[in-house]
Image (cartoon, rainbow, N blue to C red):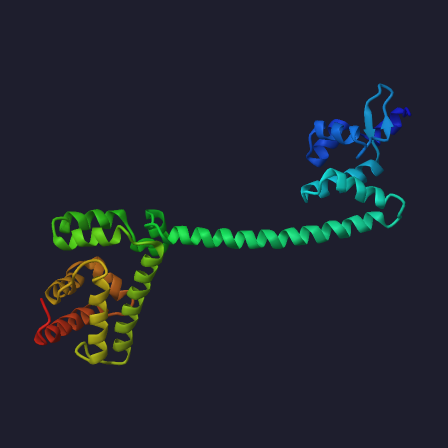
Length: 269
């Protein structure tokens, strides 16, 4: 059946339909050959032209194919509804149910992938990018370079490098939580008006020392040296002063008091 030029303007060629539906021309030719979607019109030159009804049928085929229905089953479904005026709605309901089922399967797959990915990430050392994301401005290549220059020949530095080389993101997250808990312990003791020699301040100081032992063996004598550094280095001082005014001195005094008590009880260093 031939059409006028006016009719052609309202119809679509194979190439136009391929672009519209995101399928290949070869696929459309195959659907035509097997009788699944046959263009209803022809141009005067004999080219296939798709009507609006053809496009509706093709739309159903494309959706079913994306849901991985075999072509034979699609043909059966389309033919079963060919004489039913409610066929289009029935196809849409069937497709919707299939899509929802597929979504459930995909959600389960995403959950499984996330679980596997989390396990993989937790089993490997943290990257520098992950460290920056976790600690923000508290992580700096410049600080690390300075620390290596200052302490690179010490046993503590070598211990720290060996231990942290295996730390995962989860390990570093726990380190961060411990650091925050220690700071909160000192702040709570200060807010309660307790002196640096109080039991609460000593417990915070001891928790501070034990958190450092995640990295290297920290004797009481070494802990004293760190406390002195907190007052001598403005950067360390600022870290504590940003939490509470006067905290740097308070932490220094609490650490010294805790070291006095620890060494008085015969603890090493």
